[in-house]
Image (tube, rainbow, N blue to C red; front, side, top):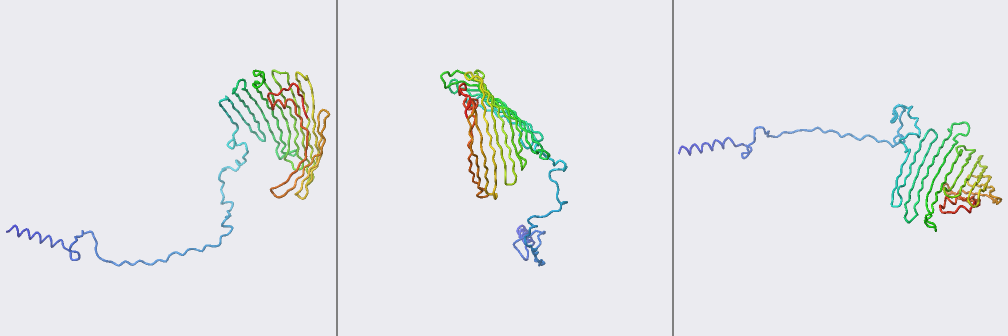
Length: 346
């Protein structure tokens, strides 16, 4: 009996201390704050956007004072004197190697050495073509050297004049695979030398004068040709009036087994007068004198031009001329040509 009384007394005590007047079903921890409060927030006016004026030229292209600008790349203004010889802007040389089923090997070496207002340029090239049928292969190699130098445009006499000196030599070895004697061998040597002076910088007077020589010979045959050439061009331009002169002279020295030693020559001369009218019409009229070995070709020379629009010009030209073709030129174009019975042709 006493145990039952104590049990009911404990239940009553626990129930009494765990109840709350506001929420008799939930017991809240001591750190929870309960109740109501009124908080007032002051009203703040929003910022009004500023006035945007009309877009002006200064807004698109701002103007800065000189002291507001900075040099971006050059710390020393004296270093701004740059030239085209800056090696970072171009390649001085190139090597090309090739190989194929019937080409092994083939290659080319090019090198250029630039200097102030000039350049030295060299080239070596070789090609070994194997037989695709019996005796059809050939070997070719050549070398060339060019030297160019120009005067400064500040010179008092002929500013901007360019001097050129170059030479080239090539060798071709091959057999007559398509002939009645396919095992016959031939070694062809061909080359040239050139020296020229040219000035296209001046406005009133331009010129181009050069001398050159071509040579062609065979190692195992009695054939040797030397061809000397000289060319001259000059033009005097005064406002809408111009005077032009062109000339060319060639002298052939030939030695063959059947013809022996022979010589022949060729000349070409053409003076002309040009006239421009209203920047729309251009006319260039002259006369051509050319010939070789007593045969001449003298004929009228005429060129007309009409400007239709800024990008369209109509041109008409009548300029017949005799050409001087020698045995050496034919042999360079056709390796299997027989040069023994041919001298030259106009």
